[in-house]
Amino acid sequence: MATVKVLESQGIVVEVPANQTCCGQPMANTGCTDQAHPLAVAWVRVFRQCEYVVCPSGSCVAMIRHHYHDYVGTNPDFIRLKERTFELCEFLTDVLRIKSWSGSFPYRVGLHQSCHGLRELRMGSCSERREETFSKPGQLLSGLQGINLVSLSRPDECCGFGGTFAVNEESVSCLMGLDRIADHDQAGTQVLTAADMSCLMHLDGLLRRRANPIRVMHIAEILAGHAVPQ
Image (cartoon, rainbow, N blue to C red; front, side, top):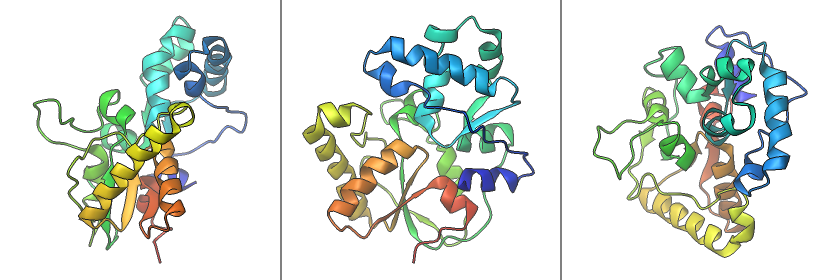
């Protein structure tokens, strides 16, 4: 709902189809392609009348744009929608051409850059590439008054979630997540944010189990301005 509020603040008419389902990424990542296929077909059917599709989770967008061709690649509605489906920060910066976001958020904020957002959506620069440093979520956050975007020692390392990886390799997944939290601890993070719900869910669970005071907020919640930590 924070995503809806952000979009409506920019004059966008938002519809949230009640009959939408999972995009099918968990099934596809596990090799269950027969189970992923009907979900891809359903996604096209549900969203085919939309001008744009905006999602607050980069991994779902990556699934649609980079992997749906295996399931619905010849569908003309999908071909049209593929280039019109965006993660929220992408839509704000690349479609609406917003340079920065106004408002106030006087906290030390640690930005987790999810793997799908970096490697498949190119929402930020990657440490393994020689390129100019950039971050679309960081660009939006940097305009907020009082915000302090902390520097992490490993700014684009995986949190360890990885969908069913967190189930099949629970110990490794948790250790990777704890490594990310330790990096935020040393940086003095007060609020940990990201543009992917799955990463935030994983890290939030680890933080709560250890009574760590770092608050977890989706970037849409910060931009919407209605969920300021107490």
